Image (cartoon, rainbow, N blue to C red):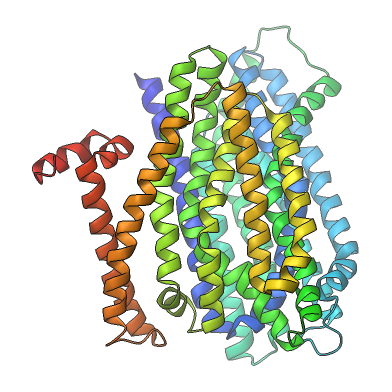
Length: 543
């Protein structure tokens, strides 16, 4: 019982830290936008951040999880000396990886900046030198983060989730405080330029990583005597060579890296083709930075509010599906898949489509009123549903041991995005980038579901029926909210922050109440959220 309680506690701690980090990562953009003053002023930060994310993913993603898995595996066998050998060498390897990642990004920055601004000519607000400089500033963070992520993996391998959770939250808080404080001081106290403010904002990633490392060091000093006693108690003769050790780690981590790269690469493709496509379409170059920032930063943050659920689901379902699939409990696995998809869609569909309907007041509350951004957000919001499904179905494929197929599907979706992006941007401007992403993700979802159906022997009929029911309930909710929204627009303006907030509060409350009442009455809320919700429905005489 105590072991079960420990597992639940560890899962809760990790999930809570991920949720807090994601919420902070969404909300900080509001004050940052106010400090820096508009989408066009955020462009250097937007341009620099995505290459950094891609390099970070290549340099570190997958290895920390693999280290956690194998430290845990050898600890379970009592081979604590092998665990020590693994974590010491992995920290060294990831230190080198971080240094190489920094050097590569630093050296490639001029080429990335050139490709990003291609087509802008001399009329763009920011020059290639500006973007190169800011990319080189953020590249310093790559030195620290692979080491940091691997150290977290080591703690997780020793079944110690607290250090990972605490360091993750501290990293985000330190990054945001440095970013906001630094940008404010540069612009409003020292009266320096926008480029320096963006440089400070990007360098905040390195500051956050340093604070996280200090947090882990504190925990390591406390845990080290316990780990040393475990190593001294090792009476096994198990030994593993470095060659076989890293071969196993790479086989596990490479598929994870490729899957993790899909969304950052979608955004990088936008970064390389967006301005060029707008130039070909005849859009004035002074609008390019503003439109790309709307696409890849401001509207993207809002779309990510409901899709942040998908990350938690992806992490939590892989171990349980792996266990049921490996043990041959296929019917139980089918129920896990059905429940995971059902809960995700139950929450994500109304939230994403609600964002689409209320795009104007939502964007105004977060940033400032913009008819162009509102139109992009309306078009972008439904893609959040596809992004959630892509993440979770890819995680299910990993659970049923089809990592190789997952890799090919991801590569195929990236190829589709790359081929379609420029023509669709030329035809539909910034919305063309959203459309190509949606098509690429739809391809991945269809392929993932086909693999799940074939190799997991998963019947689709009941799941499709549930999805259609959720769509119908959402449609009713949107009709009611849309009518209330229309009435409020006769008295309130979406161009005012205060009035937009009133619209959001009223429409949001109506939407939640209508959707809750429908799903309580039909029993869907109890099915997805648990028996306590069913008890509530009976108390309200809805069942």
